[in-house]
Amino acid sequence: MVTFVVTALASTAAAEPRVGEAFPPFTARDLREVTHSHQEFAGRRTLIVAMSGTGAGDAVRAWVDAATARLPQGAQSVVTVVALNLPFFATDGLVRSRARDGAPVGRWTYTWLDRGGDLQQALGLPDGSSTPWAFVVDARGRVIAAAHAPASAPAAAPVWNAMTDVMATRR
Image: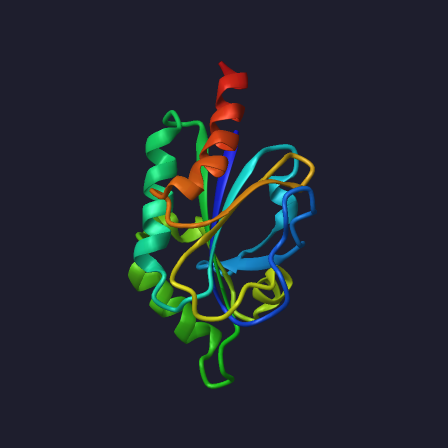
């Protein structure tokens, strides 16, 4: 099974993971408040889309829509991870409520929130970019393809090629 993870980030740190490096470990709670971790992706290839700008909804949706269209139905699981380092007055309840407003009830299990900003710090993406980063992580958790581009851009080709490779081996 192929998994897609979409992250929306708002922070500043060092440098994003490079091809060949391990993707940073993380935990997050879904919109029902159930805890999940990166370990759930062990043994399968995963697409992770990361955003550092706050208006990431359309770009995130474009990556998920493109990934869903490119892979056979039933061959993927789409997980959205929203990682935000928010001020103290933005409570977990408020953040989850707003996220629930934007996600259909059927997606609440697959919409994960890292409100504390641990993942955004671990990824080290610069603050405020409206251009997404996409990472393909192999079954061992290593980045095998990466792009800093919209889903439809030519620069996204390594990501799509890595995801297509896994589908070709499943046929």
